Amino acid sequence: MKTPICEMLGIDFPLVAFSHCRDVIAAVSRAGGFGVLGATAFTPDQLELEMKWIDEHIEGRPYGIDVLIPENVSIKEEKGVTVGALAERIPQTHKDFVRGLLAKHGVEPPRQLESGPFGHPDAPSSLQRDAALHLLEVAFHHPIKLIANALGVPPQAMLDMGHAHNVPVAALVGSKAHAVRQVQAGVDIIVAQGGEAGGHTGEVSTLVLIPEVLRAIKPLRNVPVLAAGGIMTGRQMAACMTLGAAGVWTGSVWLATTESETSEIFRQKMIAATSRDTVRSKCRTGKYSRQLRSAWTDAWEGADSPGPLPMPLQSLISEPALHAAQRAAERGNENARELVSYFVGQGVGLVDSVKSSRAVVREFMEEFAEALADIQALENE
Image 1 (cartoon, rainbow, N blue to C red):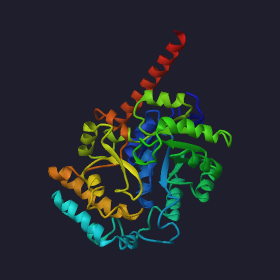
Image 2: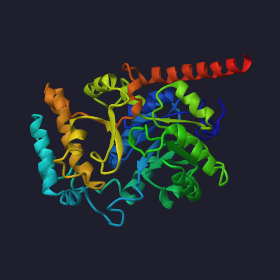
Image 3: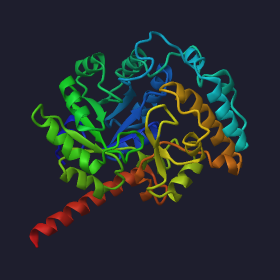
Image 4: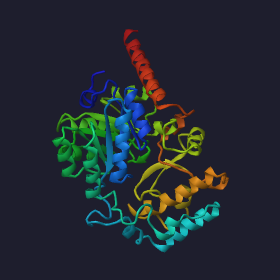
């Protein structure tokens, strides 16, 4: 195929796969797609190890990384704030609420919840600009072909860094207004992500968002758009490209693969879930993100909830608790299983089994070709 995305990224099939798992990244790129590693949760040393492994296993195929530099976050103007310092800001009411919720499901609260931070207390918050740029510095020691950012316009330093290395900079958007701002700022690729998507997402559906974004940015500059949000099949990919997208950005579909970082328990919950079993809530990160509905999400929406904290405080209290619930569930605690959740989009209703990443890429290619053949057949009738 020849699309602007294929030419920019050096690939033959414009299927972009976002994942926090290095195994998925390598498998997708080897199979003909383009893997993008979610790097925000790593320290610089950890990221170096992950990317070195990818380089050794990706067989020279291209890949990229994604960081998270929120444009609007409570600690944006602070300098050098550490995870430990942030943890001290968590109100006792929220700690008590989480401990009570865990106890209700027979889960021992993690020690990190008592002392605050999830991770080393002296580590800088990865959501601050300088920490994220440090991750990018690590990444540019490797042959990456794309850098991407979410939750706002990338800082100028990120744009400059990408362009200095001749690497395209992508940005995720959830509205046409956001897309216009990104194009004006100088990004090279727009990822228009509909509200069906897992993780941080807006409210506009993919089917509406793609033509809105394309129409809004056309007078400004020729910027390719990747469609995202609920895309789990090659036929959906073909539909998005018929709308004018240059390719697709996918995430949730890789959570149900054999290489994924998700647990067997969560994979089973994905297979059992319907498209109505996800919720868009602030209860995990402090900003709206779509995730699998569970006892955790229900509790934070309940009458007794103290309400989620702003980003990044909510993650400091949610991640240790959810990890503890996951471990308890893996040890056979059925009540803890009710708490298990993860970021996932409405496309979860299309998941019916666990497959290898290579098999998913192959199915995308086959279904995409079938969809094109069906459209061509309509023209010949």
